[in-house]
Structures are given as structure tokens and as C-alpha cells.
Length: 222
Length: 222
DNA sequence: AAGCTGCTTAAGGAGTTCTTCAGAAGCATG
DNA sequence: CATGCTTCTGAAGAACTCCTTAAGCAGCTT
Image 1: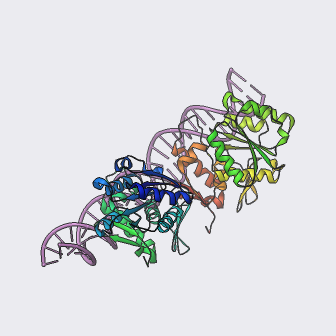
Image 2: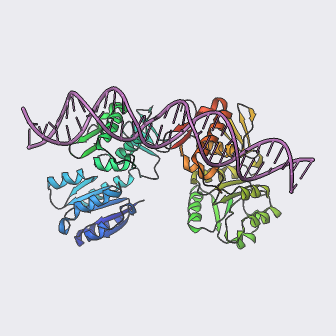
Image 3: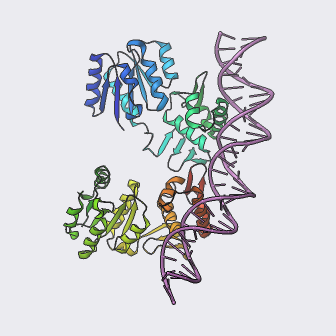
């Protein structure tokens, strides 16, 4: 799935971005209105490009809406270098962030990097440094060695690797990974995280706690 | 002669299959209408892929028509795991049989196997370590010794060997292997797995339980 | 330092899978 | 079409996995 949705109210900028991305052979749709974005099915696209400075400050709401049902990558745009909004957006599960004005080439490079990233359904292998997930076999390899995982641990790690670099909310993980028949308890998630960290050995510290929010999976240098 | 004819009324599925096969460098023609297939010279192709669930139940008629003048290999597709049609089709001279939905890779593998050795009808076999499945004779050899299997056991094992290394979901197996006329019960699958493990002797432990998901067929070291 | 939030350990229990067995359904034979 | 045989199914209980809960400690924030 390589369709991209651009949510941008500035018509001039939108046309510029559209031209750039379509020129590179991408299939891009454009929505100028925040309300329309709120009613769009997130999973219809392989990537969202979302301007946070929409009228009525819809930006963060749209991000929240997307994250309620999907883990599609979201690339955020903002007109000003506002640290608070940027932090908040990454906490809410944004995957990348660009400050306007930006160089068209840079946007294209980041979009292509995100689209190249392992796709949720059709990829049967996820890799991040020495951590390899064989999705078809449901097996985890840490530095080439097979490590036994339970169902929850494997699903959890798959989410982390898919959205590496992005902060993921605790509650979002609870809703997706834990047994839906019981009311998910955040303490339960703690336990799974703890065990997963242990099993990941040297990569255990890649699961970074984002205090008050959730976790972020990232490498050493990041 | 490596031309392939696909007889399939479902346009979406047909396009998917066409893409898959043509992507592998094969020369594939497509016919959506059963009547047109009935007037096609069988010998113009090196392989037929024939959907049995065509409108007006032409499927078996087409197979009969082909067999009247040619022994070209015919790979059959069916939307449902209908044992009676399957048996009837093999009696009429079908060479292989796949139940929809199938893995694209599996279809390609079988088509290529057919094209590589056109007279392979009685040699087609699946092997994994000391486990050998003779698909034409429907016989199982364990370390060279013949082991009696029932229909369900043989089909089950064939699926495992074809997709060895991958975790296969319980429900997926239930849908394909058990009697479709009754609501498949997962407990029933347990029983077949249990018996199959026993018959496989030393290879019984190759059928690994993937807790909460299904099973995975794999060798010792894997 | 106080008050949260998050981490770890250990134990209980809910849910899943395995095995056995008996009966039903399908199939071939006479 | 009745008979006997094979195969499939479904129920029951045992065995097992691992998910969850609880409790105490550690770490962060103010």
C-alpha cells in the first residue's frame, strides 16, 4: 500500500507538495479540511502527512483519531518550531516531524523512507539492528539466536519494531495486545514489558520509557 | 511449451494470479467465460489453471473436454473444500488441486513444478527431512517406511510440509482440512494433530504448537 | 521529601491444548 | 440394501501455558 494522504489547508503549499510527490511516482490524495480528515479511514493509506497548524487546531485531534484505529506512519508538519507541540505530537504517536519551510527534497526523502519501511500486512520479516522478527514463523532472533516468546510478547515487539522511533501510548498498547475479554490493566503491560526487555538481552534498553506516556523503541545512537 | 491458460470468472482473483505468474516470466492467457474455454484447443497450452466454481457449473465439463483430446496438465481451483467435487475432478484426470484462498507463492510453485516436468503426474512429491509425501499416490513415507494415513491426516501434513517453517493458524487449518458441511470444531483438529504426530514417529515433534495461534512444522535445528 | 509512575518478582488462575473414548457418518462389499 | 469396516467428529477431563493480579521497591517529578 503506497497511497499517501496529505492533510494541508494551505493550498499553495499543498500543490507544491503534491507535485513533488506525484512527480516521484507516488499516489497521493489531498484533503484541505480537518473535519474531512477526521472521517477518513486511516488504514486506506500507507502514510499520512499531517499539518498540525490547521484551522481550529484540529491537527492533534486528527493524529489521535488516526492512532485510535491504526498504526500507519504519520509525518507531521508544523509552521513554527514549537517544541511543546512537537513533543506532544511525538508522544501521541507521530512518527516524524518537519518544520516549515522545508526543502522539497527532504520531504520526499522522508516520505520514501517511511514507505519503504516494513509494511504491516505483507512483510513477513521485521528487522531492527540485531533484532529480527520472523512474522510468518512468529519467531524472534536476537543477534541470530532464537529466543522463545509468548503471544503477547511477540505482538508487542512487532508493534515496537514497526513504529520504531515513535512514542507509543500505554493505553494504545493495552487495547491492542492484551486479552480484550478482560479489562486491560496497565500494570499487566508493565509485566510484559519487563519480561520482553529481559528476553531482548542487550537490546532490552531499546525499549525506552516515555514517562507519563508509554514507550519508544529506538537504537543506541537515536 | 510454457504457455498457461487461466480459466477464472472472478476478475479480481484472475488479475492477482495473472500478475503473480507473469511477474515470474510466464506467458499467461486468461479466459473468464466457460463457453470460450470449451471451444479452446487444449493443446495450445502447456498448462491449464481451471476454476471449478464457474457459473453454470461448467468446471467439470471443461475438464472433460480437455481430457478428450489432450493430456495437458490441469491445475484445479475451488472456492470450497468440497470433497466430492475434488475426488470427481481427480478421477476425471485433474493433476492437482488447490482450495481458495491460497498463498500466491504456493500457486506459483505448483505451476512451475508442472511446467518443469510435464509428465510429473505420478512423481509429484513433497519432502522434508525423512518425511516424504507422494501426492499422486497419496502415500506417506517416514524414513522410507510406508505409513497409512487417512484423508485428513494426509492433507494436513501436506499443508504443513508445503509451508514448513511458518506458523499456521488453527482456524485456517480447520477451514481447509475438516469436513466443510459441519461447523468446524477446533477440538476435532486437536485429535487429528494428535494422531498425525503419533504416525510421524520421530518426526512427530516437528509439529510444534504455537500457543494461542496454531502450529508450525519445522526440523530439529530450526 | 512527598506523591506519583513504573519495575520486578512471585503466585494464582483463566484459557488453551492434549489425549482418550464412544458414537456417528461415510464407504465398500456382498 | 444390509453389513462390516474405516474414518471423522465431539465431549470430557487432565495437563499445561502464560496472562493477570498483587505487593513492595525504585525512580522521576515537583
